Length: 459
Ligand code: 5AD
Ligand code: SF4
Image 1 (cartoon, rainbow, N blue to C red):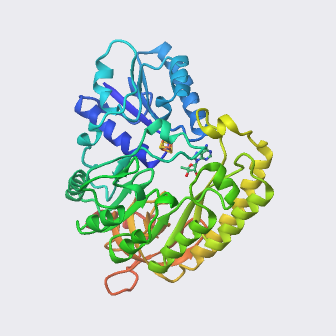
Image 2: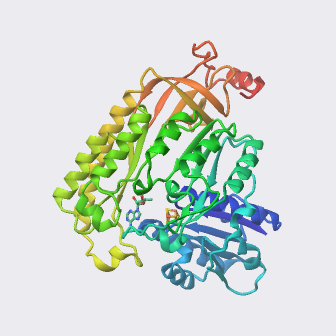
Image 3: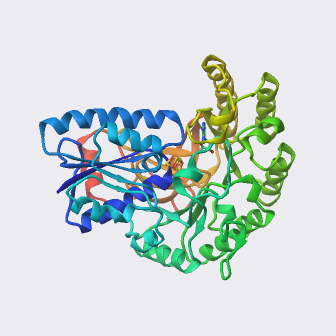
């Protein structure tokens, strides 16, 4: 079998793709790079907004055409697969295999079956089958929990991924050991709401540390950098900020989705905190980590959002001074309370507010990134950038960063970089040697440069 996977959605989905890919390989499949080479195409779907759902429809439409012309098995997994909406789409586009986020290990059974196979149960043993990360990858994701116990009125995730289930600390540390043995230097702890780790369905699990203590534990493993995502402000505690500050490996980066700056909207979203409580958490983070890089998620045009409410979101942005934000237009999702009970605002109004928010985000990102000019940042270089002769990576604060290759620094690794240029989207600079001086740049675009680079050991 030649299999190809297409992944939409969040980091959780990337992690699940990695899991399923390794299952496919152990079943004897060859993973191929394109749809055309494959006789099994599996799409890992996202259901959080309408757009990713539309993309899946388009791809499935294409695949259905191809099915008429050659032997092709089509599969759909992930969040959309779990929903009635996804199952309707699957029927319409003649999907053969459907696996919800809790049934991924049924992939073997599904491929053996001669008829349509739909797996939609939530099973517990997913984590026992996590493969080691691919060789040479310095970064890895590590799922510490699945599902979510909150019920934000706009969000489909509790339906697609089920209630929160924390993974045992032993399991987490075992997977971390495997990642470290494979050479991983930066691990991102993943969960819908990592701050609620160890408290499932409102009950504290015996023998499970708090999230703050989990950070301290992971910090002792020897991993060079630790990040985590995502945090719900409701479950954020000052101890998390304290643990971050006292654990050198934990990066000074916090992604704390606020969604709106208006108490009225937050209440309708059932976010379980208000503006004041949110700002208190920001103050706690800044107290322990004055240089913390702050990211957030914002939804504009939630049903009933007035101009006044939106102004409060803008003023909150200024009050916090975010480094950056993921900004979304409210997308009504069938199956969510807000879809059922509230009237969607006109498209133009939502788009116009998004434009104003983007202008604000760009303004702050320009300013915040400019503050990094001249500073030295620890950059994890992943490998070659798009432009020849350059490498790309990211800082501890998650800023995408570009540097020219230098003598002794031509590939993946963690380097000190002096920032020489900034934009709202990225930083660029020069790699420093152990004496704090820039390493000599390699001459670019010449055969001689290629020869020199070829002859150098990888950093
Ligand atoms: N419409 C728009 N954005 C949404 N998000 C979640 N559900 C919706 C929706 N129905 C956003 C939230 C969340 C991020 C992952 O996606 O901001 O934090
Ligand atoms: Fe990730 Fe949520 Fe999309 Fe599922 S619905 S892929 S959890 S963002």
